[in-house]
Amino acid sequence: MAESFFIEASGDGRRRRVLALDVGKKRIGLAVSDELGITAQGLETLQRTRVREDLDRLKETAERLGVSLLLVGKPMHMSGDESRQSEYTREFAERLGKHTALPVVFWDERLTSMEAERLLREGGASLDQRKKAVDRMAAILLLNSYLEHGRIEENAGNEAPYE
Image (tube, rainbow, N blue to C red; front, side, top):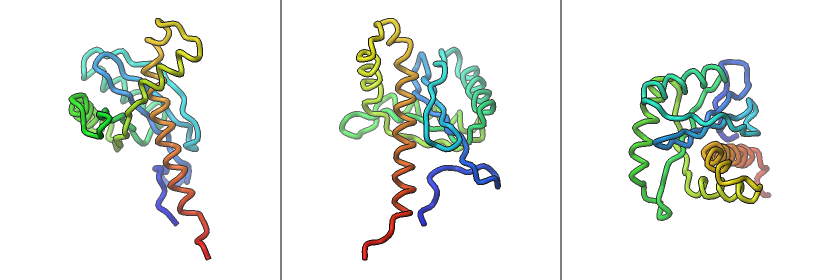
């Protein structure tokens, strides 16, 4: 059987929640999974202030929601190379992981912002509404991608071998 993709709570067998972050220099889009790892729910976008305050607010959010894993969008060029933003994001995420004592997983976020913008536009959101919601939507798409990958990985371990 395949190793579980999700972190389980200590001894109770339930999966714990994942907090997804779409890190930008002005805002951080946030989404959280349910305990079963099925759905992603958007949270209020964090307006950045100072790094220390951002870390404290994210730690409080993670504790309040019972989060056991931080999923951070990894900015990449379409070629697969890291972008300038990748280094900044990695440094911030490493500080957040130390500050919260939670594991950090980086996840390819290519096209999530463009997809979020498209979905909001198709949903009839005004330009002002899209600006306010795009970071949260990008975090939801990032988390959904991660959760779907986990379901695929788990199901692959449960398939009967060909005879």
